Image (cartoon, rainbow, N blue to C red; front, side, top):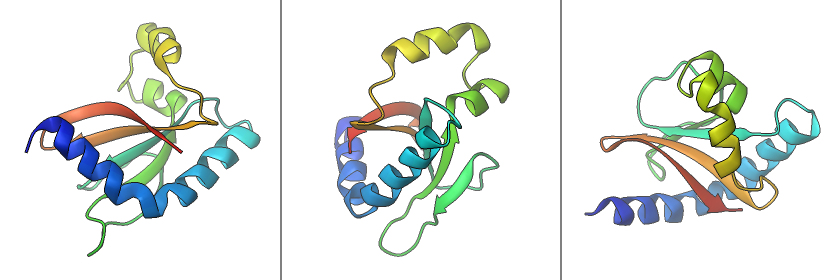
Amino acid sequence: MSQIDRFLELEKQLIPYKKILSQASDVILDEHVSKYPIFVVHQQELEMGVPLIDAGTKFRWSVNASTLEEFVTKEIIFHDKAQEFITTYKDPELYLCLFVLSELGAQFIFVPR
């Protein structure tokens, strides 16, 4: 299975969860927590963000809500690269920003809400 196929499969699996992710994104934006919500999609123990979805039988991924600010604090995105990230960040009213941790490594992807 190619990397693109894996991400398409993940996007398909996320469909039932888009509502909860969209609501979490709205809270992060509306409460002025951050202008840049990021959802960490992972399959291992992770000390980052706020857990939203636990992996189960139907969905084998866990999802935590985080922000650009936490990524910079934890040096996942270096401070001097934050502005570069902001310029590539898509409108959070239209897209969900996912940081996918998998056997293929780590990658940011944006999926339509």
